Length: 173
Image 1: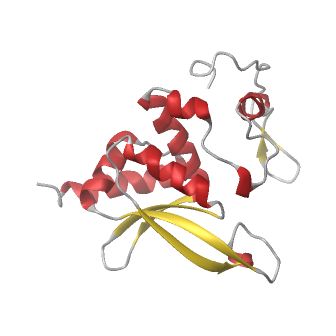
Image 2: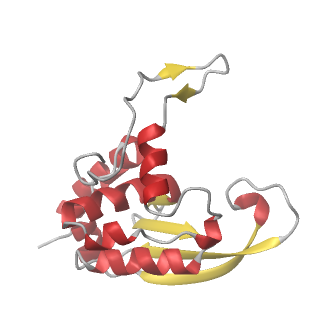
Image 3: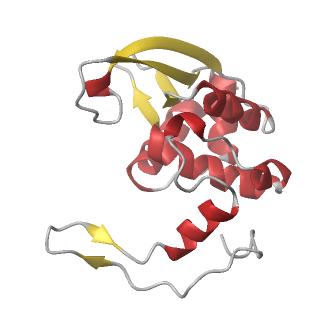
């Protein structure tokens, strides 16, 4: 973050530590400073948008932003029928549309879907109300391949992405 956003003042990061509850944590000052600088910190999910700095940034920075966003609120799913779907979901239609346009910078087309979802399945909420849920899906082989070429996920979703790349290799001419 620091090299791509030099105007963000940050404090030195501390080493990751496990709390007594067994949760991994750290000093989040770099992330908090970035979010404050770009007007995202403290906003509700329905008010967030892709920051202007990401729109103006080099493709590598936009790809890193997308990778982080999809790692948090996205999915890499392997269907029983052999199908592969990469998706991103939010209650915020504007954010989902921003992500769709950002993916178009890489030539990645998506499909926007809308549904009402029980809140219990939306971000672990415990209310009885239903919420609108907006999602993007990438399912076409060429779009999945472009995604894997440009957007590099980490962690468990990154491992699934590596599997997807292997599966796609046999499907692309």
